[in-house]
Image (cartoon, rainbow, N blue to C red; front, side, top):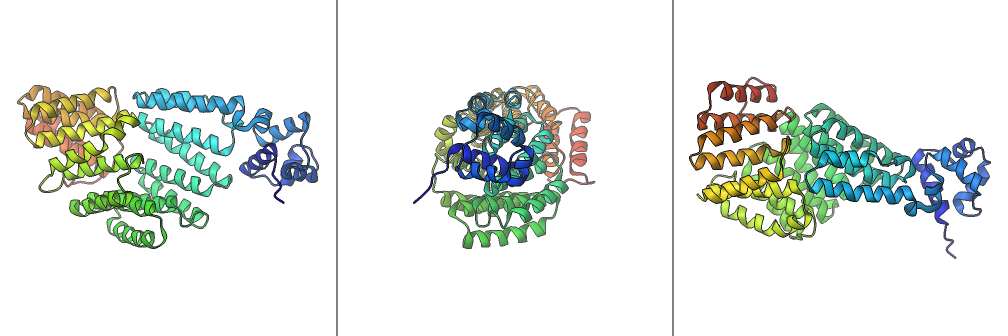
Length: 434
């Protein structure tokens, strides 16, 4: 006969495990006999009101949560805050979304809901440009999930942490943190999609740090293991990450091959949120190969359009408009290129670092139309956004590209020289390769 455990009993056990307490530890903290705590967790007995309050205090949650779980006022409010934050992020108000989530009372939530809130807040801070705080939150949620015995979700959070540290330019910390979490979680989450994703993200961190040869060898080994032991999702995720590795190494054709493999394995399911994002990466890469393939890029954008509209992410919609502007400009459609770039800039209004590409595309379209003064103004907007970007090879390439554009547009020598100097500073070396 199967004995069902009362939800209150399950929540007491879950909160205890999340806190890293043994039954004896909890009994001491709540001034109870260990056998009583054992009976509570097994559902043999139910706690009275006074016992519930003492348990909640010892576990760092509320009595209402232990009684009601996801029906508690705190849980319902956290869900409402998540909805409001998502709406704000879609509207391009990431900083406001982060403030909305900051007010959620995490101590009243179970480990899964608290992690959900923290991950959303970290995403909002990332979009708002506060990478350092985002990384601290991701480190916190990773720890919570490890202690709470959620290895797969902990691995996902660790992956996000490595990505945040890499994007922030703290490359040694990204590699060190990634290796530490991989060592901790490899056995607990072995064979899961998330463990393959963590390692492939770690490979990218090595590339960003300059350990290119090692990254390529490790990446190919990872792909081999994913093909044998991973799911289809794990395989296409590794292909996707290896595309970034090859692109960073200047191997655009190999990167293109990885992205096409990823899309083929993913099956083109536009309902899967990552598939339209993958198509955006593919479209962008199709414009950088030699020769560029703007018509193929536009076809990928058209395939992703509906899913992107449904998703309502201003960042992704703006990125699609930026890529579309570049593709139409390559096809000589100056007016269309200008309209798409202007739309992208409008969607990313404000001092946002992720708006640099949109302003660059606008400058290119204006310059092609012969409007040099307006083009220079747009390019200087790029410089303002790049000031917010962390140092590293990608930022160095962006500054170098900006210097080339300012020079082509006829800007004064001081601005051109400043862009090239920032490229050198961002790279941390004396010479920046195009």
